[in-house]
Image (tube, rainbow, N blue to C red; front, side):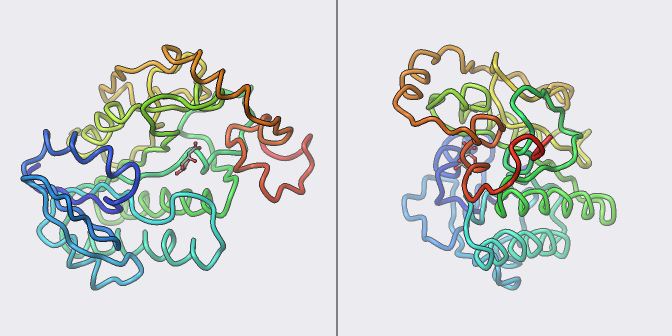
Length: 270
Ligand code: 15L
């Protein structure tokens, strides 16, 4: 693959992936609603509003594979989630179909399954248990990906990303952290691997405390190089400064679960 598009390139994950993707792909087109001005050789920028299909179609023209990081990356009010993560992701898949794109790597999130309890170890085939409107939108994106894969033959690779950072920043992140280099390795599998048709994997490094069985990624050759446990002292020291979260501490989604929570702690989740 020669020409890829990274949507949401101005965001935190986009900024971290750009230098790594440049090493793997000769032409990297970046899109965002915010201009990216620090372009490196091999990078170009095109402005795109995800809720405007013609502008998304212009952004994907001539592209072989898309890394879709765009949209709202945390919980927000419904009108915002609807525009950016429901209508926006539909426009992205539809534009890709119209323009003959071969692969989409969809940045899903652990918050699509955030209401699973921490004592459970879940694989990527479990039903969604979203913890937020944002998590619902990620489950929608995964379902839309399955539809475009099955109906139109697009290769779709959904990564339920944990938390991308240089180090895990608290106890929860020891279970779900992913180093940018490991995420880039997963993205490249999603764009390149011949067996990708519709796949869902977890975006996690080699984490001893993982809540996720990531066999689906390992089967495709994923071999993470980073281990959360190497940063355990840092993460637990940061955790010690945080207030307890009686709801969030029960569920994998953490504070995304506790915000607005009015459920029954015994009954909610799975
Ligand atoms: C996410 O999906 C968010 O995009 C990110 O900002 C983090 O909050 C992460 O999940 C997390 O669960 O730590």
